[in-house]
Amino acid sequence: MGLFTRERETAPCTVEVSHKFESLHAHLRFNNGAVVHPGDEVLVHGPEIMAPYGEVVIEDRVATITRANALQRLWTRMTGDLEFMELCEFSFSGEATL
Image 1 (spheres, rainbow, N blue to C red):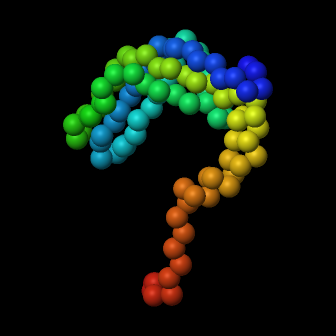
Image 2: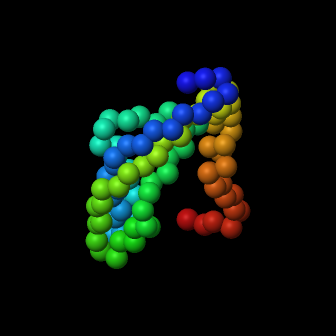
Image 3: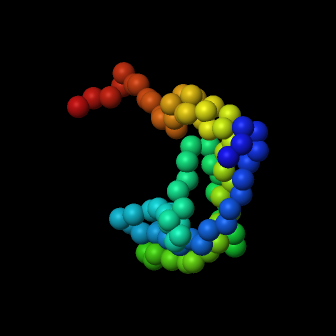
């Protein structure tokens, strides 16, 4: 891993998409044990997976992992907590009654 260069690697993976009342999720597991670090990007190849309601779809795919360079990794670690707050939604209302 260089200071300015990015490396790419391909990895076999398993994609699980659930569209049930109990669970609505999509999970990706690398079959070769690859690990994704802060700043890395993952692209799963193939058509999108649409699970009908009430079903879980599991497919084997190939993914390309683009590794972050040293500067991108450092920047992601420094700003990651700030970007996390963008995912939070806060609502304060004086109209709530119990």
